[in-house]
Image (cartoon, rainbow, N blue to C red; front, side, top):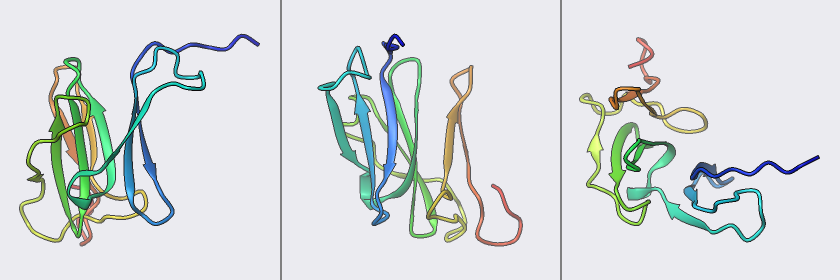
Amino acid sequence: MERRKFFLSMLLVVIAATASCLVTRSNGSNVGDRGTPVSVIRTPDGGLVPEVSLDKQGVLHLAYGKGSDGYYVQSRDGGKTFSSPVQLNRRAGIVAVGGERGPKIAIGKDGAIQVAWLGQRSGGIW
């Protein structure tokens, strides 16, 4: 079976057993080959359960949870530095964080950033 080659940058989110999260980024032209360069970047501000999206301009958008709140940051240099965190929720303590919970992020075809999360109180998704 012929090995498939991927020529796109790849973003992965790794959640370690200790619940500390790492964002890894690969720039290799052949992601499947051994020796492909990979950078490991800690989620900013001690955040947990990060969700990553990359826009058409190459800006990395990251939503993550910390405590019971959600935050958003962006990086224009491939994750070397991040903007100051912006709290996503207006009411404190409403974002369920841990496991598969936490803020989810996506970028629409028009470039609009969409973020949603599961709430801790009845009323559910925000």
